[in-house]
Length: 327
Image 1 (cartoon, rainbow, N blue to C red):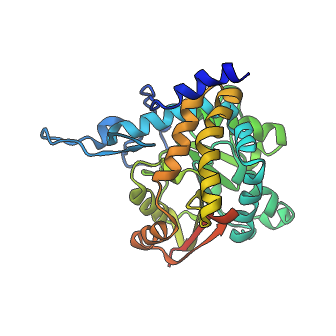
Image 2 (spheres, rainbow, N blue to C red):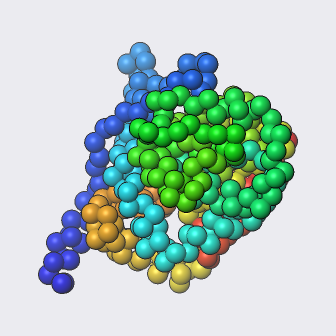
């Protein structure tokens, strides 16, 4: 066993690479033209040098990061939920439950879950408000309008959303959305969720549409975090709440050392054994270390225009839950 694992561990010292994939959002969601995850959208004209950003510990041109991240999640989509359970020993479920309890959505609330392709937050939202289903009678025409989803955004044979749609899941990766749709059908929640392919930096929704915006373990994969935060503020209604669940900085030095050893030595190995892809999980571990710490993210939220910003550490700072309001 040791002999077979050693070559894998030796391979892990190399930086991950990914092929380029371009995606687009289905038409019909926003009348104004926008760019979605295409390299040409954010390139610099006039021969000026393009800015660089990080992809894990690797430095890449900004125009390449979205395509590399897309490839990562395209590769891991079908094992994403299994790996979440394996990596966190199932604790990610408790973190997501805590997010919903903190959000405390009321009947009639409109939720946008960004980077939520497999539907974990969306399904929890539906369960949370499901006991008061009768109070959804007489829902406004807003949901009827937004549910006119472009047929090109559906899987073959999939019916369109009904008036029972209560939450919109927006994810840039169509493979992740496919996994979420299948889960919804298995759990009988297909009519409750609307699935939209879209970019967190250029959301395909009009202003002031949602009461709650959630993003769980997705913000660190965005190329321009500040832009994604401004978009979140834009689509929230006045009084709406932003909630971000993300890996953060461990506060205890002993736990931090153990966490680092587990992250860099065990998680990529699990990725290879379970998903057949250690490179993608090496990137995911590195991306956590490059993401702003708790106080820095709090400042970014305040700079974006959110009020009453705060955060709560969970599991010793392995994860933090940030919250802010649009006033």
